[in-house]
Length: 160
Figure (tube, rainbow, N blue to C red):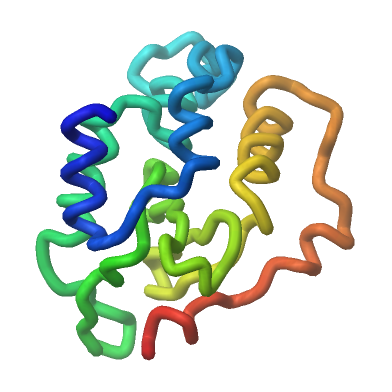
């Protein structure tokens, strides 16, 4: 295991899920090459540099950033980043994509920075990868309205 991943385990005080470690070891090539926007502007980066980080160093850096100080909510409450939430990517405008190492909320959770809330995006990491492939690689497997209705707030799991 890369030294940065060992540091992540210590930072989160939890073992990293094997399904996620397997994803890093066999990262989808199409997401490594997929640009985040239609223009060939390299400043926008690739999916592997933003939404689903591939680099252990980048993963460590973003998790240290998330834990660098208290988070201020819109109603002026402060909270510390939940230790068991491993940041695996970001939106590019302040939101983090995370996995819950306690397994209280399965799949991938999004921290919405504007509202300081947590929302479940997918039931599994694999489903999150499929969502990224559909969004950035032109795959035809789009989310259905029923899938979108399944999303729910996960905030209560992290405020307690």
